[in-house]
Image 1: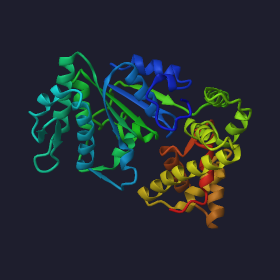
Image 2: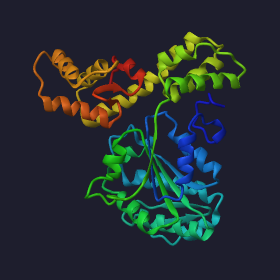
Image 3: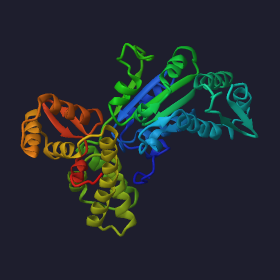
Image 4: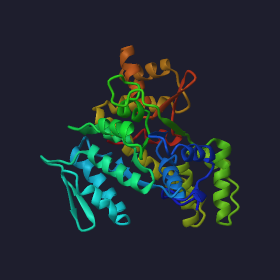
Length: 363
């Protein structure tokens, strides 16, 4: 069902991602795959649908659970890994015989417990045993870290050396790293940083973008057609909500479930989007101790596109004084890094049409 608001796990429910599906399928033997895209553009759906379709074995670590935390510690990450491995051992009990030899791992019945104290389990050891088990089975184990930019907040432990070790030595492991922000590549994986353990490693990159106007209209038409509904206002809905598949899916779901009231579905979708976008924006503000007024002013200024000079002028008008060029550039770069802004030609644009709805947000 195209209008199911939950992440898809079957290829038949994905819409117009043929090239991305083909690239991911053809890259599943690669040691590192990086999938970049805004929230709700379908990264999770793409991964789960392809891995299920190819009957792949995978561990799915959803780092969104940490988005409201100011920082993450080793215990947080290792317990997430423990939970997901226990999902696999329920169906693959022979994996326990590999894991029980690791220091810091306790096997209890058909599940494992990972220590995070003085004799903590080393992630590299876990990766090695997962690789050996997968090798014995003649398969690849895929480790998915979804919204991995949250791990930038990990304190007291660096996971990158373990990933680099696996990349170089564990041929039956493949990492699929996703992020809604460009900093997942530049600030977490640090692929271009000479001091990073992953510097220079070849990888496959897949970029999921919002639907174009034409694709969004087809998506809405096909979604309503599935439900036996002739919906004439698809272009209008795109003009209001934009091309983010998440908002379009939610609109279709609400429209069908609540009596086909178009205006009510639009208002409810906007309310839902504003709530999620406001939460993400407030986390961004709190994480960096940033001046909310300045950043909201830039978002307001760039609703329909703006130049660097437009941003500087709007900030100076807001504060009634001259603002240093470096300060202006720093504000813009922060918004670019967190994917609130994108630069197209020489103009800055907000990445989501409904982002302009949060100008009165309270953090």
